[in-house]
Length: 251
Ligand SMILES: Nc1ncnc2c1ncn2[C@@H]1O[C@H](COP(=O)(O)OP(=O)(O)OP(=O)(O)O)[C@@H](O)[C@H]1O
Image (cartoon, rainbow, N blue to C red; front, side, top):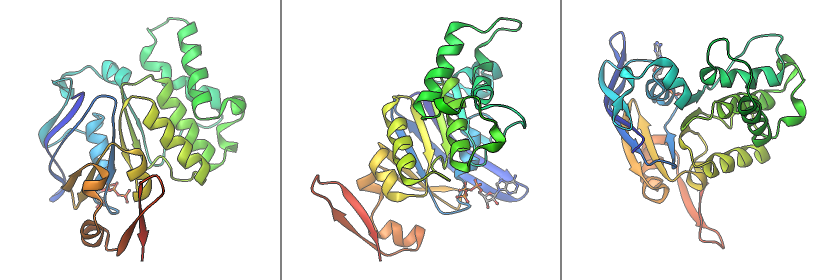
């Protein structure tokens, strides 16, 4: 397992936001993080990326507690794209994506061919190569989202954490992005609200409710009518398409 969370507890004041959360992700696979609003998905991603310290439990990368990994080494390996990723004003798309190279560059070292190639590849992967000279401020919400993802990809992480990455994206770009993530062979953890997309693109799912994991397993194991009713408060039934894939239909 490349990344593992063991019995994480995280509180704010007296409120327990994450309560005894444990999970492990197979290298190269995609884990979908599901749960209603406020269930703790973003908080968990921040702990997994080392941006917050748990009050109890630990997060390990290849068996090493991330609290013992130097910040710079962690930044070379782990990338997190926030839900409302902001960036500096008056910068171009290319400059934003270039920031993803920061952890790889030695102090005072010049810009290398490897840096340039990583930026090029990342821009192409999210379909934003044609926007490289455009100002960040002038981008649409969906374009900004794709640029933030390119910045994370330019970091060339082994673990990629994405907090609702399909927010703001039109349906074509939602599907393209999730397909890209599932094909990258990075170890990815993706917070999602669309349950059908989670079933289509994630190898395994974890469902959080009020800070606790209440279900985990393959999409077929996790997404049951009972779970959808109990956790998401919706009635649904399932439809199998011609290729045998299950789709959730909401009543
Ligand atoms: N710094 C904080 N101070 C106080 N409460 C917090 C803080 N961070 C998170 N919370 C609370 O913790 C709970 C979980 O929040 P979190 O953002 O992790 O949920 P989420 O599952 O990502 O929600 P959403 O689907 O709405 O994005 C919420 O009730 C939130 O108000």
